[in-house]
Image 1 (cartoon, rainbow, N blue to C red):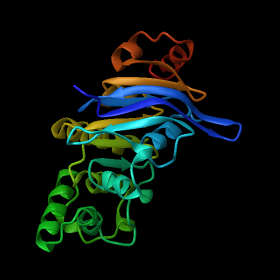
Image 2: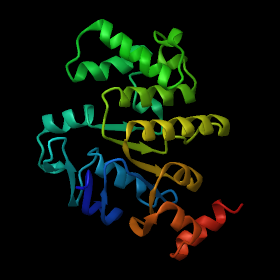
Image 3: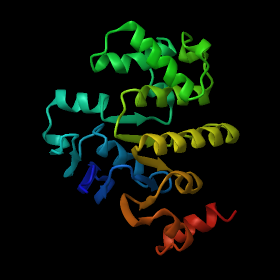
Length: 256
């Protein structure tokens, strides 16, 4: 099986500051990878490089398209990248306001992504939006409400529906439960886990919360000061961490 996404010695620097340094890995179809570390470890910088939100300083990101072509992200045209991000890829921001059109209704947020790939029939768009709101546990009678009228947890669920309506193969998530109440986090995590499994999605999830990584991911990378210091199966790393930094993370977070 060919990797869906490959990072080949990715580095990103900002002047003298290093965001991430020489990161390499392969992600296969249906696999969920978590990237963990403290604030400033480089995990969000890496995610933004992988998803094409910022260019790498060196190294390459490769993606295998539906027809089997292995394409370098930086060699795609702007139109090809935009299409990729509207169809095969999704991106869930920590702050849902960054991933939603706050000035239009919930239904329009979901429908807009469908229209971006050519769907024009209003009835089909409305039906799909209604279906996806139900799948993320938002009542049909809230379809015409603005996201401003939604709670933080509902906005995050709406952002997920907006991303998944075009049946992507890969979704990037940046601290998807950050800033939410514990009870809301639990419901959202269960929802994400169920959708990833039922849809066969591959995912790259950035989180500082090892419990989130344990619940959602099969594989984990631990970052410190821009470098990947340990990677492997999630359960194996959490049960038997090898790097001193990972041992400290596990002991301070999971054994409180």
